[in-house]
Length: 249
Image (cartoon, rainbow, N blue to C red):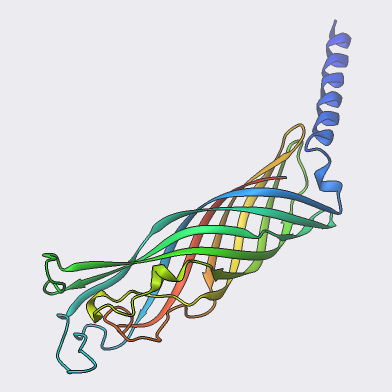
């Protein structure tokens, strides 16, 4: 009886190991394979203020103050989402190179609190400046993988990303607006460095990978071409993204 039980356990163990190696559709053994991704994104500015950021904004033509004194200037987190493709090149059993072009829809928020309300017919002292963006992103990274344990493998990813805003110009057209109704604008393109942690989960015919990634812009993304009350107090705007992704390969 004991011998039969041991043989049964050994048989089930071998069957499980064999199935584990076959699951995932053999995607890890391919030189190049493809997939797709869905992303949830949280955007936040890192604000570097000027030394005199509290000072009222003066009309460039008359020199008269158009705003009251600033008491606070800070970023609010804002959600977004993205969809994209995966192009994965196998380097070795423990390393891949990955390109994941993605279309991202995300808003960015910067809040300005004044000592007294600034805009006419707006009886509150805090103004939110929203920067709506539609980004084409091109992240390129190296994926470092652990050994596979049955149908699980952990990994880390390091890389860089080029992003360009492809939003309609109508969203940022404020040429005829008074200074108080100008828009906060960002540069059209920027570079970021990225780091991520994730895990590969193997199913019978595909692989799913949940991943958390941090992105930090390398350069100032503030558009200073047209001085207004919203870009004048800011010295630099850096961008941070926290992205949760699901990859299917």
